[in-house]
Length: 157
Image 1 (tube, helix red, strand yellow):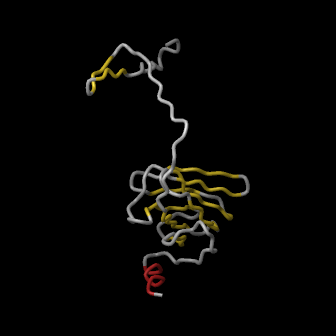
Image 2 (cartoon, one colour; image 1 turned 180 degrees about the vertical axis):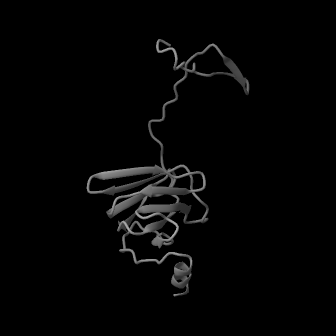
Image 3 (cartoon, rainbow, N blue to C red; image 1 turned 90 degrees about the horizontal axis):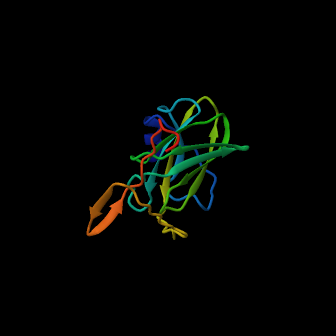
């Protein structure tokens, strides 16, 4: 109850989420006085350390529409969505993906927090490609070459 009172005092009121097996403890959806109408703002944090997670994607889908945004270096994201029911999914390498349902009513903004569980991923079919260039560099006893940088003013190159 104290948590709900703090949320209301902070400008947002939590609403219950439907129980889903992939929703981790610590994840939530709330109304936000700071977000513009139909805007979904949020963050992605590690469920183990509560530290922000960077460099991932948040994808929202509703009736064939899809909106995607990147998670920034502080673990935050922002999406403008049309009114309706949206499935909002966080996908970040090294963490189990997670989906939350958000009902956008067009009158309020929403705050979302994804508390993601670390999930080791095996990377398959990684291929390293090298090519020669006119600018070799020396690094730790090896010769490393940069690929040529295309000149946008010269389409033939």
